[in-house]
Image (cartoon, rainbow, N blue to C red):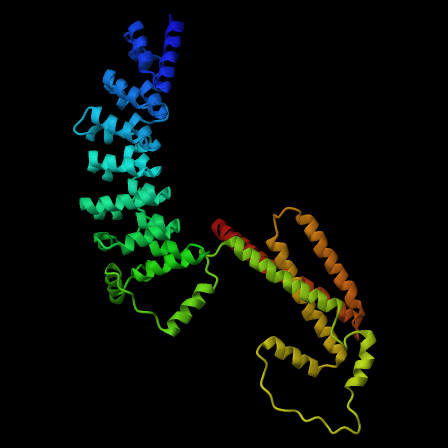
Length: 482
């Protein structure tokens, strides 16, 4: 008996997929209770769900006539037949379910909630089915206020799933129904559609909200805060600006008097908001203000700039410094090597017949490092200059190598990378042996100090803090025991 029921249930579902109404009636003749049996044997899905998925309008119509309560049933995934039809865009099936289902003008079936508290309008918005949205709006205009379990309206979902045509249709319906204030509705996190659009860098959505010739721009709360206390401009400040569209998005918000939580809008900013609502062009900032804005814009900002991009820039800079300092050690300036020092001394010696050089007054160089280099070169002999050169060049190389080591921690093949860097340091130490120096011990001490200093500057403060914390903890424990 169970086998016969299972076989009959299988034939029923095959008829639903094929839209075979004759097969349905034949099964009903064999077993008038087949639809009730199907609900008991396969409660996770009824033939109406199957026919709706397959787009079989005739079968759907007949199923609703025979068993109208099936339009309310959820399948195993939490979808009702109307939800399925709305998501797939089966507009004729949507109309049929609304017209033939129980309830006043389709209101009841349109407002039935399914998985995650979603109704049919939510599924139509998620999938961008504009015609289905129109049909649902006409059947029950209250569906524009339906919210999911997460507090999201259909307008939130059009932004979340990037369905611009559906978003624009929803805005038109809000204007038509006089429900413009719904654009300020927040989800469970307090995010309005403006918060979501800015976070997803959807410039066209923001422009539509802020520049439309209707009450939407006037009703929109540009500086509304979510539950984290962030405005749309706060979110914009934390985003990475990657292309001209992102810059245009920022400018659109600025023209609408959008502000951060630390800089509330002033009276002049509110005047700009009125100008935007009336499609008036705001006043351009002064040159000094524009220059300051650009300097701030290109300066590194924590939270806005990507850590990966920052790391890549630091690696490039460190690699360039390492290249320059290594090359300077392998091929030092003329006058510092053993082979060139004597010739350089003879060349630089003044001729007895030549008049004494006249020193012209000059200004200090642009950087203190250059000034110190000139000062050391004049104060010391050529041999002293060689020792200074060894120290500062080795310090620059060691500092850049330490940056590379720290930034590449955790990289694949990091051991091979460290071996190559240590080998380069060894080659560097061997190559500078050709640089002349009065005292070999002094040269070794200077070079060793230069290589240790970058690491000590990072390690010593860290260990000093640990020791200080340990000392304070020990002191508190001793005082407690006393």
